[in-house]
Image (cartoon, rainbow, N blue to C red; front, side, top):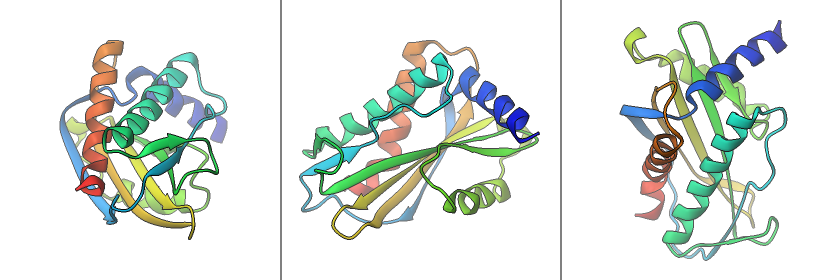
Length: 179
């Protein structure tokens, strides 16, 4: 049953993964600042079990995060070498369920999903997708910034449209960190 639910969520994910439309929500959960940091390590490995479409979207998200950091003067370095560690979580929500698609968050995933599920949009706004971005101080292992952007998914969007909307979502989620 769980595998079937995960498969259906992954299918929804691949059909419209973060092909965001104009409606969006941006919310800062933990506020921190990029001031004083010059390097960051990013997720570098592909998520297990992704279809080719999901892998493509995953790569677009990672690229957008890295590009946004580098455009603000924070250089990407290999894992274990950065002052910051940056990771993210994808949440997909439809009329029946809210599912996280990542293995990074461990036990805190349930808390994030529960909060997201309790704040569902209206039926006209579903399905929705969200990207939750964490920035962790590598020296202290503490989350110094967590923010997310949620938007309505648009199935069958072109690759260029998906890339553009993913870039917009990442910039919106990280905007407060760089101000």
